Length: 130
Figure (cartoon, rainbow, N blue to C red):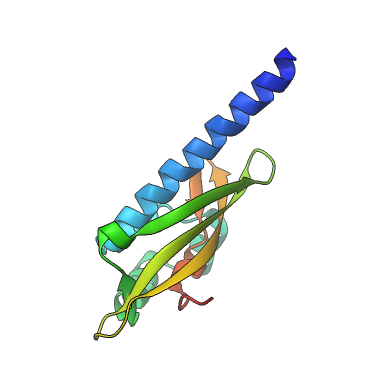
């Protein structure tokens, strides 16, 4: 039916928007542009942590994203309504002081706020885990 096709088209459009935002966020994370990255944080996490504190804690982390070719694979978007989504991606994380790159699947909650998909900054501060 036409309405079914319209819903599927809307879903595909939302998923593509979420992916684009997630790619932009990963690019800023990889390039260590933490002030710009902070602006992609959802309202809840920006209320919990000031920009300066976020930047300081990001710089102190003991790990970083692996080089760009290892960045994110198997990216999947699961929409929860029109304004919330979960992005799962297999990503390479490498200790800043040397060591093996670990490939872990991480899930990030994203929210549509003021026309942009935003991420939970607190999740970015956590040590990646299985």
